[in-house]
Length: 184
Image 1 (cartoon, rainbow, N blue to C red):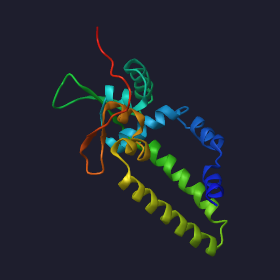
Image 2 (image 1 turned 90 degrees about the vertical axis):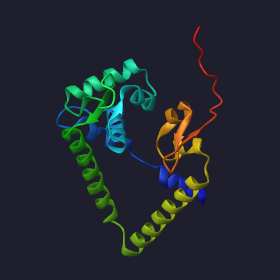
Image 3 (image 1 turned 60 degrees about the vertical axis):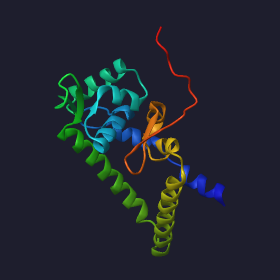
């Protein structure tokens, strides 16, 4: 039964999503751009080195990504109030609007699919979805902090940094098993 449920949950059609992203009015939106937008929406303005880490790219690559996004008006660079040497990347209103539009279209498409279900099927789906959310929350409560980086969506870069935010907001040291780089 578990395998059948996993098969059902992992069946998807990414081609439809990619078609939507390619037809955005201001030009195609890449998955990397979407990842940056979602990170900034969830975490607020970020320093370039933190974005590079979260994207698992070099700082030079992150700069190029942000340059393209800034040209399209999705993000802006702002000086850090506490340290004028630090440049933070922040969402613009058009960037927020893009995320809202994607969420609205996703919700509309999901509503079309759910409308095909009977009341009994909808009730069962709701119960199953709620059970899945509760199971995820229980699992997150039991996982060590390093695993939270993968399970809660903060990704491998946070785990490699050596500290991963916990549910309470504190940083917890992790041992990733990777040798630390040394300067010569």
